[in-house]
Length: 126
Image (cartoon, rainbow, N blue to C red):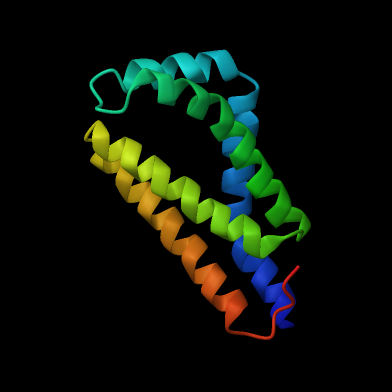
């Protein structure tokens, strides 16, 4: 199997996860915002930061997933994915949602391993 094909297949589940999260949340953006604000009321993160983040997150997730699926600017999509996961981990820690932190850490490790694999192999950097 070619390295590029293998790399695509390895990133496919992560791309579908991000694309799916973004797509589902975009279809109910106001409800997602309401849920995020309600969920983070006990957080130290102020609501004036949560609201714009809750609108941006689905768009960013959708974009990262789409770029990865279409093999466009994959390296930047992987870096963006690591940043998004870091922000989500911060938010989950702020409300002590340790189960979500675990899932987000798995995503972050996956993003990081794919980034490492792309940087230290002969895979074309699109």
